[in-house]
Length: 356
Image (cartoon, rainbow, N blue to C red):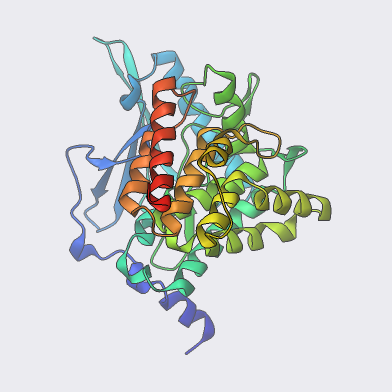
């Protein structure tokens, strides 16, 4: 078989099967991200469209804000496409304004480009197929790596991106697409947009900028979100993502990135879990929660990474890890009681290992 044909066919088991597809014609029922609701529309010719409904989950926009935001979505897509990020064309962009509530939402229509990579990674076919997992990761990283070559300043890139695996899809030809337009993470006259609504806290702004505009934050986010789905492949994810990005960095940047990740707070947890002869007291474990990363207080994301280390070593289940991620969802500063809950959960995982 031709080499390219063989590579393409490796994805056929993951491709869309119309027999198992039930289009939702009337309601937005398919879970979207925190900011969107999604539905599929099957056309008379069998084609499938996707409608994303932005704003309704958070009380919508004012009409003026919706009009401006809709324009931003188009501008953001154009900027990403200029940077060679593959995206399905926008087929429709509409603002719906409710005169009674005086609130508006945005509806974007595009063609369906396959299941997202997070959904694919959950499939049982990938449970013991590290070669296919590796190929998916490499395909996802390729366009993001190119985007990260274009810098605004130092590590900060020109156009931001939320590079989690759920924002990428795989079509039946084995092509990966990026599908997340909202919020439009690019620079306006007010500066880079990191989230919607705009974070009010300094921590929210700093971490949002790091996660979506800083090459280091983007790399960490890719690894984290992949590991969230398949924690047993955590080391593979780290290896493949770094292998994808490092060649495009300068020698100094490579050393900085690798050294920073190797000395990250959660690596101490990994060493302890993999070699119990290396002691890690409960007090020392707790101190890791506040340890800096790249000179930054990584906060709730450090807690997520530590939890993932427990899942990677099968100390906690994938369901427990997912619950931890949901409890630590971060767009702005978390309440003190929420942080205390996360601390207590991690200490509970620690005690599970220590037999307390």
